[in-house]
Image (tube, rainbow, N blue to C red; front, side):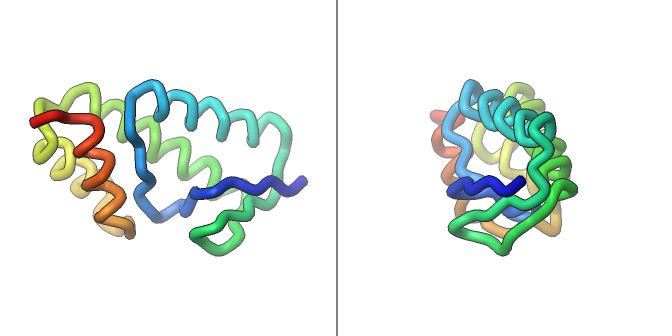
Length: 103
């Protein structure tokens, strides 16, 4: 009941380069839930459990919504920071915004 993935971090922003990528990440994490994985090992964070998967899905779903509704990079960054004020990895958020928005 253990799975390894490169990045997760339930309280850390992820690098999200495109809308289809975010959708695929949500689907993959829902697959973890359906398979009943109880431990997630990552390269960039401590081991986490089922509750972290649920939290990351909620994060990705909200970020997807904000990406679809934001007009530009700065609006997106502000909206995500407002929704997740305690998250680490601000550089990852900025990389995501740069990939998702050209202006």
